[in-house]
Image (cartoon, rainbow, N blue to C red):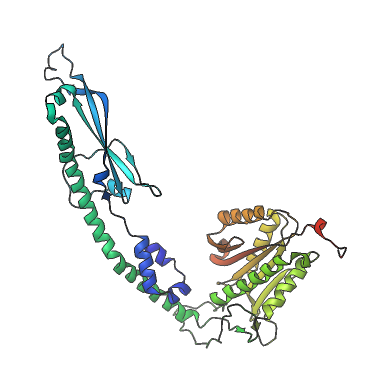
Length: 405
């Protein structure tokens, strides 16, 4: 729980509903106590050999043990709860050995179970006569009382733990919120002001306001030049616009059959510039045949690279190219992949996932064709936010019913 709360982004902790998060964390880290279903205990009897110690084994011709004919009565006890609790020692213990022959953990809708074996010689049971059944049952119940006593002790410790979860989750969230607020106070002075166009056709437009610049208090040592950056919400919105545009292109892939990387880039560029305004009238600019960027004070705060899929090597080259462009301490970059040559799209998605598994510091995949990665750039000792978006524009030319192409 500590690790999960610590890894929450500043945006998440600043906007989350604490009551919902406390409930979520309490439920996630809740330990299910052990429940025993005594009415469902099953009993099975098999023939066996019962080993007995020879009281005359000190004599040189006597064996230490001898075996007698008998039976093994196995009681199978069903249970539910966290099976790991059986491996733990509660605060209150009974000084005896607890053993089970077979242990099955709960799985899916099935309960778990454990077995207790009791061996009797035939003579021992025959001596009980008509009370044989009660004799076996009472011996099991007497032994099983100790097991239930230990289970009760474990469950008492579990209850203490579970009852503290909500308060502890609240404490962790409050501490994380304080940390985020501290960072926000610093970062607000460095954010690049982007203004969303009033006529932007966004499905969920993000209203952005110019950030009031406040002078930062310099430390006693010489401070490094501050480097502004775009906010996470802007970066999220930019990628959302690219995703909506790319998804629309997929639905009419035939329209873009003859478009190459540069033309596809220009389509995304036009869409992005309808959403944001700037003093120059062009927030998103070209920096190469396939690249898009946001510039601020002659530096790139956002870089997008468009590539037509041409294999793993070209894909990795595009990733490295856009990573090398990043020079700010909070660089945000995106790589947009278009498939135009491969009839099957899933293998491409698999290759990108394999790259993320092998190279990203961490990543999430909110959609099958979107990867949000944290990439560590070793030469600059910094993390870079990298989003990869892939779109399928493959068209089977043999399916054309006219001769336009």
